[in-house]
Image 1 (tube, one colour):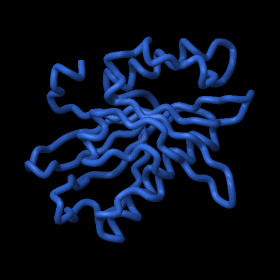
Image 2 (cartoon, one colour; image 1 turned 180 degrees about the vertical axis):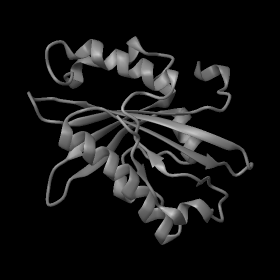
Image 3 (tube, one colour; image 1 turned 120 degrees about the vertical axis):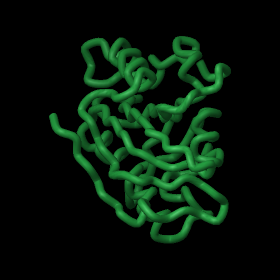
Image 4 (spheres, one colour; image 1 turned 180 degrees about the horizontal axis):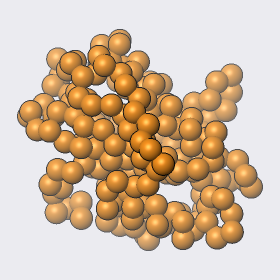
Length: 188
């Protein structure tokens, strides 16, 4: 399957006054995991599926994946007038990557410190990824390039995997976000 590139060009040339990262290339959605960490989480997720299309939320045990925990996020699907995704868990490495702890916040509340256009584009990308998981009830993988405030080029890799609390519905999304950069030994 070919990569899908979701272009949002203003991210290619915008940084924030707080020195947050900027994305320099399109959001790509490969069919398979693109990093050893996203692949490890995907294999764990598949091992918990059994005969079901997705595992039950209670089948996921953090004790089973201690090396991945700092990179993990868990989003709850909030149904209402519109579909929202609320962060229930946001790993310490993810906090380091994005520059803030988003636990307890909905996806569409992210990026309050960003300019309006950049914020809308970042939220739209993550919402589109989560929406695809919800709609297809299948895993989604993401790659993109960015420049850190220290002018370091990084490739980011993400996995978004559906979880259920009742048969057939997507009620949670298990996520992982990592980079190609050297990761401190405390995260491995």
